Image (cartoon, rainbow, N blue to C red; front, side, top):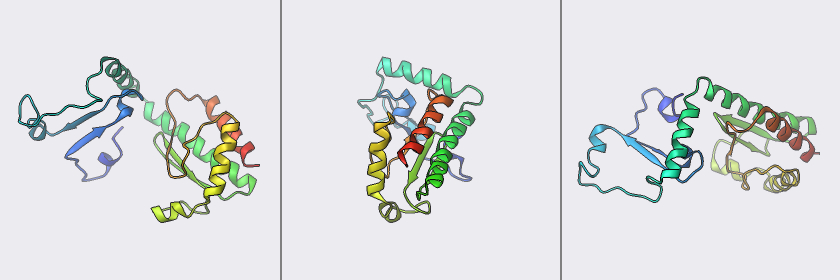
Amino acid sequence: QSLYAKALPGFRPDISVFGKVIGGGMPLAAFGASREIMSQLAPLGPVYQAGTLSGNPVATACGLATLREIRKPGFFDALAAKTRTLADGFATAAKNAGVPLVSDCEGGMFGFFFADALPQNYGQVMATDKERFNRFFHAMLDRGVYLAPALYEAGFVSAAHSADDIALTIAAVRDALR
């Protein structure tokens, strides 16, 4: 599976940076670049690099376990399918409840907005129904489902989420939208 930006034809990053996701949620980060750029870092080059997310052995072990998981055949396709099921479930539940809601997803990330059309810029996001989002957020909490607490944040599905988890979440969405 290509990283999203790297999958664009003709796109070649100078540096790729990976945050907590590379450690399976643990405090770990990594970056990579061409040999030319990396050779500028100590001990080969003059640039010193260090950080609070560098080299913790527990986080590194979690990172290695994460890399083993995502290298399994079909991992990304299965993750994307689960995420699509969830995003579509949000939209279907809203449509059935007569509530204007749009959803979208990419890989393991999803988002939804109380609007008639998917926002295309910040202004459109901020024009969505914030009050309805807040009521929905709390209704989902009351049903045992934690979502990102701000309307502009993405949600995430992981390999740990089962088909039952997705179905229970969609059922909670249906109930919360009543």
